[in-house]
Image 1 (tube, one colour):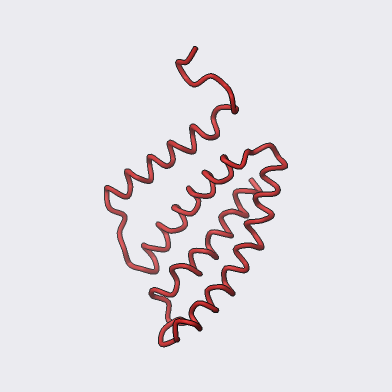
Image 2: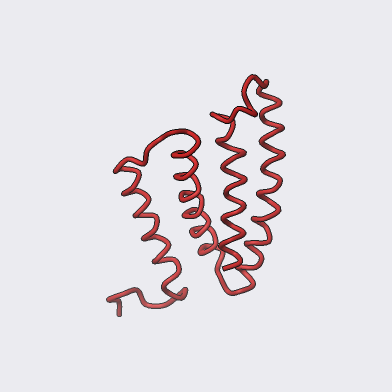
Length: 122
């Protein structure tokens, strides 16, 4: 659970760093080089949470693959909220289906131990 919370926090910072500059007033009227520096400063906090999240998750037995797939789903959940609240964009059916397929990937990545027989396999 600690890993998930840290990954969520890190993704909030990264979403702000990458996409905040598209609509947030703090970035308006700034030159590109200054926006890049501001985003880099925000991203620093993403690293401060992402690195411990991965270390804790790995130490608790998650594989690198599992950590990455979980992180991607968290990224999408955070982005959907950000796109709706900040960018004013709606989640359309095709993006929702794509998201559901990624959730299915998380199930397959975490439900079975590495090297185990797949469902229905011999």
